[in-house]
Image (cartoon, rainbow, N blue to C red):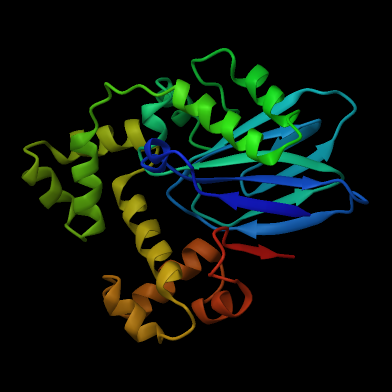
Length: 270
C-alpha cells in the first residue's frame, strides 16, 4: 500500500487545508486494515472503482467492476474507526482544518444533520466528474496541481467566520463554555447551536479532542503522562487517562507504544 501525505502548495489553501493524501495499491490487492482515532478535521474521501460501506465505527472498501466514484465525509467521531480495504485501492483524501471546509461548501448543515459519516454531496455538481479526471492523471505533480486548482476554484471569500474562530480559540485556551458565551454576549444555548451548525459537533467535544490531539502531537516519547497532563490543560493524570480511554479505547501508555505519533496520519495498523 502506497501513501503520500502532502501539505498544500498554495499559500491560500494552507489556511484551510491541513493536507491530503493519495492512496494506491496496484499489487496483489491483499486485505489491509488500520484504526484511526478522533480528530477535529473535516475529511473528504473519494474512492475510485470501489464500494464503500459506512458503519458507526467501521468502514469497508471493496473493488467493483464499474468506474464510479464513491465519496464520504467524516466530520465527527468519538470512538476509533476501523478501516478495512479488501482488494486494489485508489483513493484521494483531503483533511480540512476546523472551519476550513466552510469556505468551500455552503450546504454543510445538511450533511452535519446526519450526525455520522455520510456521503459527501457538496452544492457544486461537478465534484465527481472533476475527481474522476484527477484520478486519471498519471503524473503526481500534475495531479496535485489539478486537485489544488479545483478546490481554489470553489472558495467563497465572503464567508465571515470570525466569531466562530474566536469561540474555538477560547475553547482551546480552556475557557469554560458559560464564560465563552458571556464573553461574546450570547446565551449558552445559542453558542452551542452556532458551533453545531458550523462545526458539526458540540464545543465541549471539540475541546476534548483538541486536548487529546495536542498530547499526541507533543508526545515524542520524551515526556511522562504527568508532564503532558499539566502542559495540555488536563485537571490531573486521571483526567488525561479517562479522555484517552474514551477516545482510543486503550490506555495512553499502550497507545503510545503501538502508534507512531510522528506520522501525519496517526493510524494503528492491524
